[in-house]
Length: 168
Image (cartoon, rainbow, N blue to C red; front, side, top):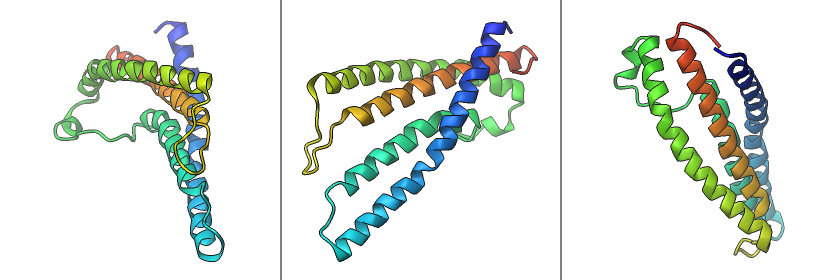
Protein backbone atom coordinates (compact mmCIF):
# COMPACT_ATOMS: atom_id res chain seq x y z
CA UNK A 1 0.00 0.00 0.00
CA UNK A 2 1.21 3.53 -0.70
CA UNK A 3 2.67 5.51 2.15
CA UNK A 4 -0.12 8.13 1.96
CA UNK A 5 -2.76 5.45 2.55
CA UNK A 6 -0.78 4.00 5.45
CA UNK A 7 -0.50 7.46 7.03
CA UNK A 8 -4.21 8.13 6.46
CA UNK A 9 -5.17 4.87 8.18
CA UNK A 10 -2.70 5.47 11.01
CA UNK A 11 -3.89 9.00 11.80
CA UNK A 12 -7.61 8.35 11.34
CA UNK A 13 -7.43 5.27 13.55
CA UNK A 14 -5.40 7.09 16.21
CA UNK A 15 -7.74 10.10 16.25
CA UNK A 16 -10.91 7.99 16.34
CA UNK A 17 -9.43 5.82 19.07
CA UNK A 18 -8.89 8.85 21.29
CA UNK A 19 -12.30 10.35 20.51
CA UNK A 20 -13.94 6.97 21.13
CA UNK A 21 -12.23 6.55 24.49
CA UNK A 22 -13.44 10.04 25.44
CA UNK A 23 -16.98 9.27 24.23
CA UNK A 24 -17.17 6.21 26.47
CA UNK A 25 -17.28 8.51 29.49
CA UNK A 26 -20.22 10.48 28.14
CA UNK A 27 -22.43 7.66 29.36
CA UNK A 28 -21.42 8.55 32.92
CA UNK A 29 -22.17 12.22 32.21
CA UNK A 30 -25.62 11.25 30.99
CA UNK A 31 -26.19 9.11 34.08
CA UNK A 32 -25.19 12.03 36.30
CA UNK A 33 -27.62 14.31 34.47
CA UNK A 34 -30.45 11.81 34.88
CA UNK A 35 -29.55 11.28 38.54
CA UNK A 36 -29.69 15.04 39.08
CA UNK A 37 -33.04 15.07 37.31
CA UNK A 38 -34.46 12.48 39.70
CA UNK A 39 -32.92 14.22 42.69
CA UNK A 40 -34.22 17.65 41.70
CA UNK A 41 -37.73 16.34 41.03
CA UNK A 42 -37.81 14.78 44.48
CA UNK A 43 -36.33 17.54 46.60
CA UNK A 44 -36.45 20.78 44.55
CA UNK A 45 -38.27 22.25 41.62
CA UNK A 46 -37.77 20.05 38.56
CA UNK A 47 -34.97 21.16 36.26
CA UNK A 48 -36.05 22.08 32.74
CA UNK A 49 -32.74 21.25 31.12
CA UNK A 50 -32.08 17.69 32.28
CA UNK A 51 -34.06 15.61 29.79
CA UNK A 52 -32.88 17.52 26.75
CA UNK A 53 -29.29 17.64 27.98
CA UNK A 54 -29.37 13.86 28.52
CA UNK A 55 -30.62 13.46 24.95
CA UNK A 56 -27.81 15.68 23.63
CA UNK A 57 -25.25 13.72 25.65
CA UNK A 58 -26.57 10.40 24.36
CA UNK A 59 -26.43 11.74 20.79
CA UNK A 60 -22.79 12.74 21.27
CA UNK A 61 -22.03 9.36 22.88
CA UNK A 62 -23.59 7.48 20.00
CA UNK A 63 -22.16 9.53 17.11
CA UNK A 64 -18.64 10.01 18.50
CA UNK A 65 -18.43 6.38 19.66
CA UNK A 66 -19.54 4.91 16.33
CA UNK A 67 -16.19 5.22 14.55
CA UNK A 68 -14.46 3.67 17.57
CA UNK A 69 -16.78 0.66 17.56
CA UNK A 70 -16.21 0.25 13.82
CA UNK A 71 -12.46 0.45 14.32
CA UNK A 72 -12.58 -2.19 17.07
CA UNK A 73 -14.83 -4.35 14.83
CA UNK A 74 -17.46 -4.42 17.59
CA UNK A 75 -20.39 -3.08 15.59
CA UNK A 76 -23.54 -5.07 14.93
CA UNK A 77 -23.34 -7.38 11.95
CA UNK A 78 -25.74 -9.91 10.50
CA UNK A 79 -23.90 -13.16 11.24
CA UNK A 80 -25.97 -15.72 9.37
CA UNK A 81 -23.14 -16.63 6.98
CA UNK A 82 -20.42 -14.11 7.84
CA UNK A 83 -19.06 -15.97 10.88
CA UNK A 84 -18.19 -19.09 8.89
CA UNK A 85 -16.33 -17.28 6.10
CA UNK A 86 -12.56 -17.06 5.80
CA UNK A 87 -10.89 -13.74 6.64
CA UNK A 88 -10.22 -13.16 2.92
CA UNK A 89 -13.88 -13.70 2.00
CA UNK A 90 -14.93 -11.38 4.82
CA UNK A 91 -12.52 -8.75 3.50
CA UNK A 92 -13.92 -9.05 -0.04
CA UNK A 93 -17.52 -8.70 1.15
CA UNK A 94 -16.65 -5.85 3.53
CA UNK A 95 -14.70 -4.03 0.81
CA UNK A 96 -17.73 -4.23 -1.47
CA UNK A 97 -20.47 -3.40 1.04
CA UNK A 98 -18.61 -0.48 2.58
CA UNK A 99 -19.35 1.52 -0.57
CA UNK A 100 -23.02 1.51 0.44
CA UNK A 101 -22.06 2.81 3.88
CA UNK A 102 -19.80 5.49 2.40
CA UNK A 103 -22.60 6.63 0.07
CA UNK A 104 -25.07 6.74 2.97
CA UNK A 105 -22.64 8.65 5.20
CA UNK A 106 -21.87 11.11 2.38
CA UNK A 107 -25.56 11.92 1.98
CA UNK A 108 -25.95 12.16 5.75
CA UNK A 109 -22.89 14.44 5.97
CA UNK A 110 -24.34 16.75 3.32
CA UNK A 111 -27.61 16.98 5.26
CA UNK A 112 -25.76 17.55 8.52
CA UNK A 113 -23.73 20.33 6.92
CA UNK A 114 -26.86 22.04 5.62
CA UNK A 115 -28.63 21.69 8.96
CA UNK A 116 -25.62 22.93 10.93
CA UNK A 117 -25.06 25.94 8.71
CA UNK A 118 -28.78 26.82 8.95
CA UNK A 119 -28.64 26.51 12.73
CA UNK A 120 -25.57 28.74 12.96
CA UNK A 121 -26.91 31.32 10.50
CA UNK A 122 -30.33 31.74 12.10
CA UNK A 123 -29.59 30.95 15.74
CA UNK A 124 -31.97 27.99 15.77
CA UNK A 125 -33.29 27.05 19.18
CA UNK A 126 -35.15 24.06 20.50
CA UNK A 127 -38.92 24.40 20.88
CA UNK A 128 -38.90 23.33 24.54
CA UNK A 129 -39.23 25.37 27.72
CA UNK A 130 -35.44 25.40 28.15
CA UNK A 131 -34.87 26.59 24.54
CA UNK A 132 -31.17 25.78 24.08
CA UNK A 133 -29.36 26.65 20.89
CA UNK A 134 -29.13 23.68 18.55
CA UNK A 135 -25.83 24.51 16.86
CA UNK A 136 -23.57 22.83 19.48
CA UNK A 137 -25.21 19.43 19.09
CA UNK A 138 -25.43 19.85 15.33
CA UNK A 139 -21.69 20.53 15.16
CA UNK A 140 -21.11 17.36 17.20
CA UNK A 141 -23.43 15.45 14.86
CA UNK A 142 -21.59 16.75 11.78
CA UNK A 143 -18.24 15.86 13.35
CA UNK A 144 -19.39 12.37 14.33
CA UNK A 145 -20.68 11.64 10.83
CA UNK A 146 -17.44 12.96 9.31
CA UNK A 147 -15.35 10.78 11.64
CA UNK A 148 -17.49 7.77 10.76
CA UNK A 149 -16.98 8.48 7.06
CA UNK A 150 -13.20 8.74 7.54
CA UNK A 151 -13.19 5.53 9.59
CA UNK A 152 -15.16 3.77 6.86
CA UNK A 153 -12.54 4.75 4.29
CA UNK A 154 -9.83 3.54 6.68
CA UNK A 155 -11.59 0.19 7.08
CA UNK A 156 -11.90 -0.06 3.29
CA UNK A 157 -8.15 0.43 2.91
CA UNK A 158 -7.50 -2.23 5.59
CA UNK A 159 -9.79 -4.67 3.78
CA UNK A 160 -8.01 -4.03 0.47
CA UNK A 161 -4.68 -4.60 2.21
CA UNK A 162 -5.99 -7.85 3.69
CA UNK A 163 -7.13 -8.98 0.23
CA UNK A 164 -3.65 -8.23 -1.10
CA UNK A 165 -2.09 -10.23 1.75
CA UNK A 166 -0.75 -7.18 3.56
CA UNK A 167 -1.47 -5.79 7.00
CA UNK A 168 -2.06 -2.13 7.84
